[in-house]
Length: 165
Image (cartoon, rainbow, N blue to C red; front, side, top):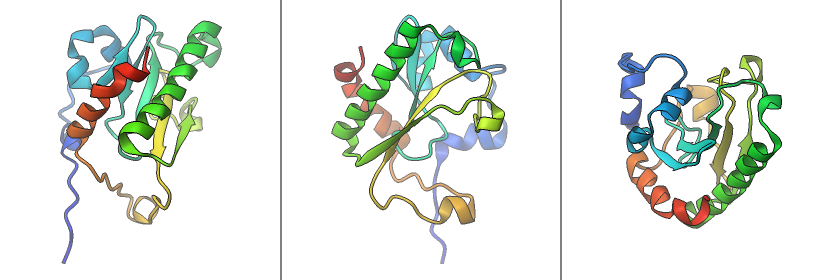
C-alpha cells in the first residue's frame, strides 16, 4: 500500500499554468495588491519577505530586495543590514510560531551557486528540527511537507507584525 503525499500549491507549476512571465520576485515587487496571493509576510520600501512556494521545509521564507540584481555588491550597506536583521527576526518568529530547533540562513549566488532564481538575489530562512532529515529528498526526489501551506501562512502572517519592522 502507498501513502499519498499532497502538495496542491504546486499544481500550477506541475501543469505549466503559471502565467507570470519574467522574474517572479519583480512581479511581487510590482504588485503589492497581490501580497496575500503571493504569501508576502512583510513589505518595506526596499525589500519584502515572502514564503517560499517550493519550500525545503514548512515555514521556509525568503527576504528579497526590490532591486533586481544578482550582484550582492550592488546592495548598499544599510539595505544589507536591514535584510540581515529581518533574517534574525524571522528566526525568532519561527521559534515562537513553529517551535523550531534551529534554522539555516543562506544566499545562493548565481546558478552555479545553486540559486533557483539566479537573476534576483534573495536570502533563504529555512526552519529546522532535530531529526528532520530523511531519505525522501535524496533517494526519492520528493519532499514531505507536513502541514497545510495556507494555514501555516496564516499563522506566520498573524504574528509577523510583532517581529518584522
